[in-house]
Every structure is written in C-alpha cells, then in structure tokens.
Amino acid sequence: MGVYPTSKALSIAREKELDLVEISPNAEPPVCKVIDYKKFLYDKKKREKAQKAKASKVVVKEIRFGPNTDDHDYEFKKKHAIKFLKDGAKLKAYVFFKGRSIIYKDKGEILLLRLAQDLEEYGKLEQMPKLLGKRMTIFIQPKK
Image 1 (cartoon, rainbow, N blue to C red):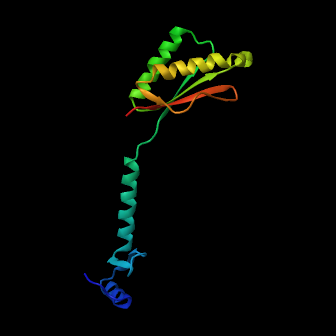
Image 2 (cartoon, rainbow, N blue to C red):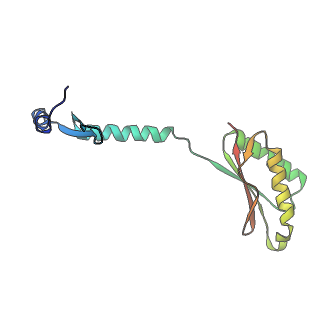
Image 3 (cartoon, one colour):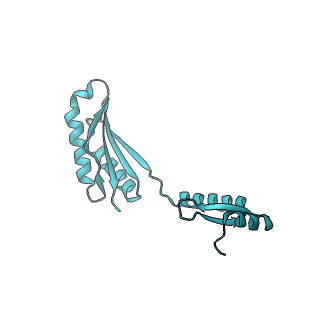
C-alpha cells in the first residue's frame, strides 16, 4: 500500500489483472483501490440490502366509526386500537359519514377526540381531526 501516480496505479492493477476503482473522488488526492470491481459491486449491493432489511416498516392500521357509534362498539374498537398501538403500528381512525349523516360533523369530531384522549397513554395524536370528503380522520403514533 502506498501513494502512486495514476499511471503507476494503473500498471499495478493490470499486473494483478484487477480494476483500479475510485473510492473517494472528492479527496485530495483522489483515493483509489486496486480490487475486483464486480466483487466490489456485489459487496456494495449486499450491504445496501442488509441496511434496507434493518429499516423499520411503518404499518398503518385503520379503525372506522360511524357518527352515531354506541358505547359498546366504541369500547370494542378502542381495545383493538390499544392492541395495534402496543404492537407498534400507527393508527388511522376515521368517522365515515354516509348520505345525510354529514350533518353530524360535530359528533364525529367529539368521537375522534374522545378516542385520542382515551389512547393518550399508548400513543400520541399527530393532528387534530380533519374532514376530507365524507371522512373525518386522525392519526395516532405509538409511544416508544
């Protein structure tokens, strides 16, 4: 190992029947290595794949309510929401307004805010209830 001019480095690479690969082009002088280029690419791809496998995938679970959901159904769905948040999934809860039930927007908002308050110890509310079309939605992020 040493510092060589480009022509010397190329001749060394040819002697060993390997490739001269530029590792760090921005360094002064540029850093190159004499290696098998195909093996270098293979190892690089392998490292990237391993890194990608380690990255956590965000799972989003959905729970749907109606504007007039009764207490028993609410409690049942809240239990599911708690399970989802404990498992580390992000929760999307929404109230779906069918037909003319859109006049109960305030009931839907109260229901979602109540859910967010009940799930406060398991997750954190990302945004206040937002009405998009016939759906009023909230997202709850699990606590670590």
